[in-house]
Length: 154
Figure 1 (cartoon, helix red, strand yellow):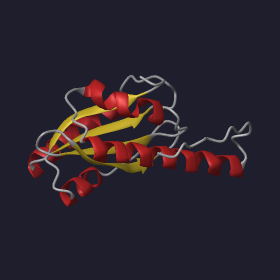
Figure 2 (cartoon, one colour):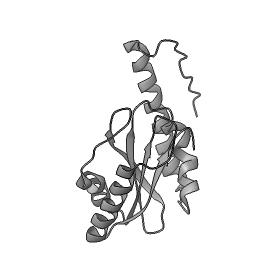
Figure 3 (cartoon, one colour):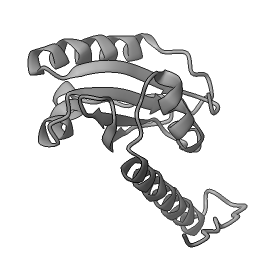
């Protein structure tokens, strides 16, 4: 496997530096995706998933909502970034959470998003989204197993 070096950039407001960071994060994400596919990662509890994504998702400067698609044995089929929001919110239609789950015939999903503030405490909106997703999932026969909120690498 080829070694990848990430650029060290001092001025993150610089559009070139921001582009470098974006490319580095995309490359990191591709490596994580390959890891899912190569090892048939099984999610047995929230810590399993948090261990895979907490470091990466803590790097984002705005909220990113990711959906993990799982098969009947809770192996990760694929992960999809559904929405990229602002520094303190990310609005999403419930239907968008399930689009790829239906496409890939997933039997369960796990939601994960970051809090750029570093505080992983769920907001009232996070709790409402989880409830709405669980209700919609019941109608679609797709179980919503969990909703992880990641902040400060935890």
